[in-house]
Length: 374
Image (cartoon, rainbow, N blue to C red; front, side):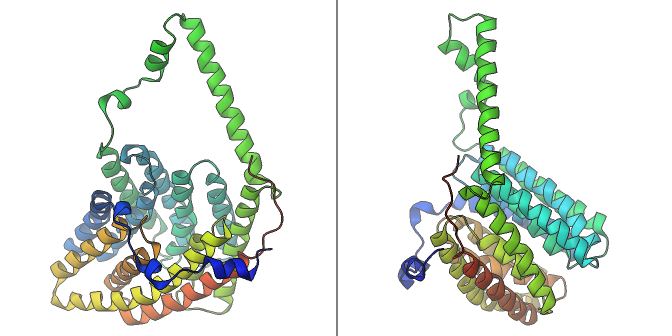
């Protein structure tokens, strides 16, 4: 059980909450991922079908988060594509089961558990799979045409994956060749083919053992990983049930918030939760101001949207609070394009975010003794 003194020590001065370390700002990544979101959005609006652009942009938006870790851009492409594929499936399920609450809850539990389990393997695949239950919840707002929604989410995710794969920053020709065997071969120059095969076989066995160890740690609640997977699944499902029971407008944001805020570490959860709630407060106000640009026409609105989402990706790893301000403003813009009043959706999202964040913060204090991860 985490103590309230730990919670108090997790708090930071206001100056640190809003500071953005220049070394962690990535303008190139922000521009690339922002373009991945902007292009499908602009295409849909230009063709007179803003709803198509919005859902394709949502696919690109959430898939792009898998490309924000410390790995090279090219290494992120598979994770981004995995995110897009999973979102298409879960988006279809969310739209199809929107009017079947118990079935939807079952799929949400399965998707959240799978997402949490993926997190034991690597950060980027954990982030990628975390978008599956997010897409499931977002799709419940549009129960009609589940196939169409799935295709649009997949198209946006695939477009984002393509842009990520084309970014070769920091990757030389040497490292991009299919060179595992060649590099090992040069280091093992005296070995014959059978020797190299034995080395590869041994490497495969070590990898399989490592996968097995991580899976056991993720499935066993006696381990830290297992506790986090179980806590994430239970808290997300519970938050969804509470939001539905209270008939919270746009209540899906409550479960989305709990899902994204809850982290394995208590301090990380406290800081992320407060950053998301605070960032949403300022973000909804920012979004209402941005939505007013729509009165000037589609071109100014799209330009504002492009700048906003690029800035969100640019500061993602530098400052989560500032990121939430930009992200919330952008999402308010998307909802406005769908015909939902910016001011009304802003308040609803704020209430739902506060609910989900609060539940996650409370649940973070429940931490039984656990074994170190295997």
